[in-house]
Image (cartoon, rainbow, N blue to C red; front, side, top):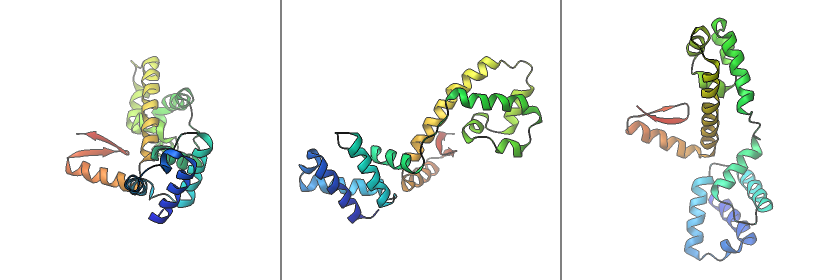
Length: 184
């Protein structure tokens, strides 16, 4: 989305929300610049549809977060499984873990694979004689929520911002793992 298209989006919002229409020229320019920086990586038509969705759904002006969230939902509707549904997959993996190949491991869902980290860790669960299924299930359910929430947040960030965070992390000697930042 370019600057002129961003102006059109803000104009559409101003036509629907008095609080935006009443902003002075400096405030509008700041809003245009901020929206351009935070939404410029998205296609104009997608942003326009996300704005219209926000206008339909809420009597209050949308934030950049609302627009990015709506845009992402429009192109990839969230069909997220519950933690229990994901646990069923993880449990089957553990049961099969001692005999599972790397290729078979790779065929499973990304969020469940992130919990295990690697096939070696899965095999460690599967072959541990002191294995407590209740403890692992509890840990899985907690981690699953963290993993899925983190992925949702990562999807909201513009690509340019993700790149900048990665560069800053390198300069600060912070390791980026799977789209998240963890200190060494």
